[in-house]
Length: 236
Image 1 (tube, rainbow, N blue to C red):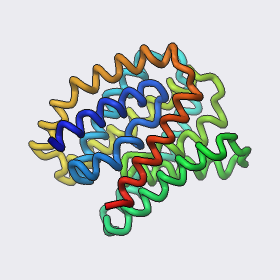
Image 2: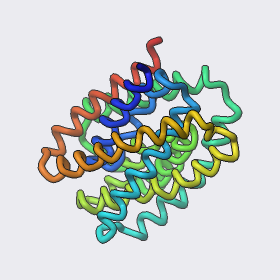
Image 3: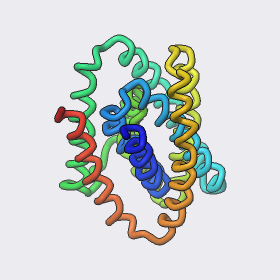
């Protein structure tokens, strides 16, 4: 039953991922941790995000802003190394509540103060490093990446197309790290294989919705769900 619920979460999160380009794993991770465990959730959602974002990146490759993409990979990749180290060294009893609080704060900020705040260049770059650290720990750097990407990319198609290959490249390195740490067990790969069908269906539906939906209304709903997702980590 837990696995079936996880597949439903996976489907819903990847519909959102296909529409927004960033929110899927951030939304799915807290609930998935409760359903299947943190190590398993990290590996499976990482692979799923890799596949879904590869699809989006290839389909929209003509809109990719390669100079911006290169800067994002440089800073987030550096932060990701730090994040992987922290996840290995620091107790989950400390990390998980911090993670839940972070997600809740991001959701509340987006809901209550939707206006983007002008930030100096050094702080925007710092948000990329922090995004990489969070991504290395919980495959969830999307919220902080958006702080940078939304400031430098104004076109919706360019935004979505440039953010997607970030996850393709970084998640590939995370997959290598997971393999080296022995996290890609037979059971995890079995669940991943079964999840491919709802994943592809979600991407197809998300791409269709993306062309028709009011983006601002949809993002508001996404952030409400994100707040609930963050609370699920904090409330046993």
